[in-house]
Length: 68
Image (spheres, one colour):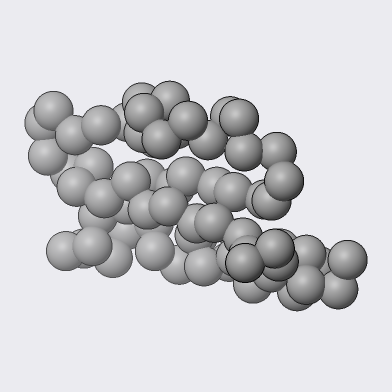
């Protein structure tokens, strides 16, 4: 798991009361995770909003991190 990167989709952004990406980052304690790249991206799985952008982040970061 040493070479794993983390992508978290902050889903349900279309609903009132959904946790923001920053709230989710804080709740998961991701700021303390310095050993691997991570990214929290807002999304709505029903409409597909944000999914492509999250995966666009994941691909090059995974490639770069695996080669390090």
